[in-house]
Length: 165
Figure 1 (tube, rainbow, N blue to C red):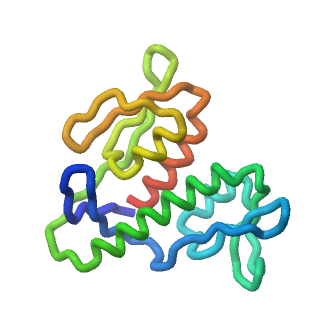
Figure 2 (cartoon, rainbow, N blue to C red; figure 1 turned 90 degrees about the horizontal axis):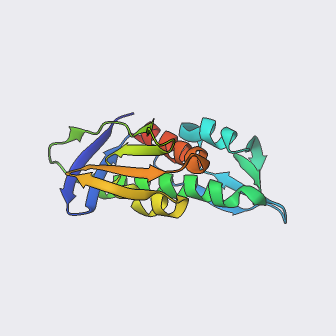
């Protein structure tokens, strides 16, 4: 999917992306599990990779059940998608011209670590919480450094975001 930039001012950005209208919800399913419901089809591969089990009738609706031990990882996925949905709603009324945003890229550097490159303005808090460090910013493009131990978390975030672009 393509992510369209509708308006950019400083660090604030309005987007128009082709994703479902309803937000994802994360709730307790039992004492030991959580439930993700809503329009999950766009990120089903990420939810499955995170250890989710899909069912058509959890609390009367389809969704994905996870162990509570995976709540932090699942919450980051859900929060990222919901952030894009919220920004999409803001941008729907805009009639300004838009431009295509390239997908985020992860590369290994010569020191054995990794770096993430791309337009990450909306992901700064998530990247910091994972343990990434901002190396440089040039216009809309930022470069974030992170160790190999954080690769899986960054790949999961990038996978979701790139699907929404």
